[in-house]
Length: 317
Image (cartoon, rainbow, N blue to C red; front, side):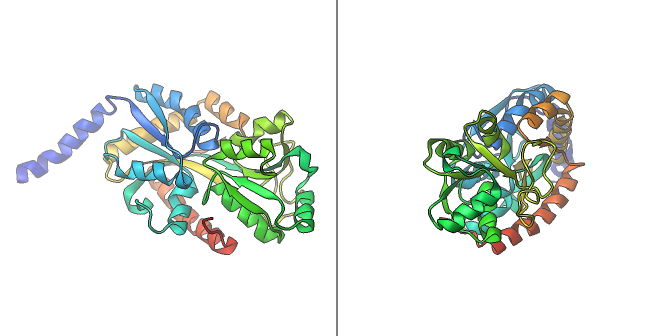
């Protein structure tokens, strides 16, 4: 038994040194076309170059990204499954769905943050709504008559919408979809009128004139969105919410493997082409200083999102 105990660390170190020796899958909790999918694909190729193995993107949408998170939590802790996740699957869904098939705190291990961005409020041009203040006025004039689309119950766009309702004192009907792409498509079709969306989901449609951008959800605006006002300039200064994405692996993944993933991701995030690609879609490349630093960030964020959920009164539809 003593010999086995002494041999175990050496075996782990040897396995980590050989990692990775086969393709690595990256689970995305939303369908193609949304922000999570875009960030995953922007990092997929440069990360594969650093690791020396292909990154296989696997979209597993549904239940506000909980399906993908549960798959990651149940995967072998060997570094060959990465979850790209936002506050939704890590912090919000456990508050809204107590009977989840995973515990984000004990079943998933943080690797690093990879991006950060405010969200975008956009409307179908046929509504005649051109500003955030006009949206507030229209909602007050016609309570319960306007619909807003989100990427799903418990998603960051959903909470952004509910927080807006609370602060603006208006009533919009929430229509959840299985991802940002389908949500934006519903606004384009006129089935819903407004969306609170991640930038990659909505900016191409705004730039093409098919949707009208009303504001970004940061108080002072963002240099990534020079043509869109922040909430202060848009007349609703108390409204502010942003979101991020990060990499997670199954709990129990050996520390040397986590470090290998962290280092490779840090190099990928530092590539000018990756920064430019993310910036074009309104997302900033933001990495953590270490896995431990990301864990500390998550602890602070958990308090923030718990307060937003409680204050907003968000519930599953």
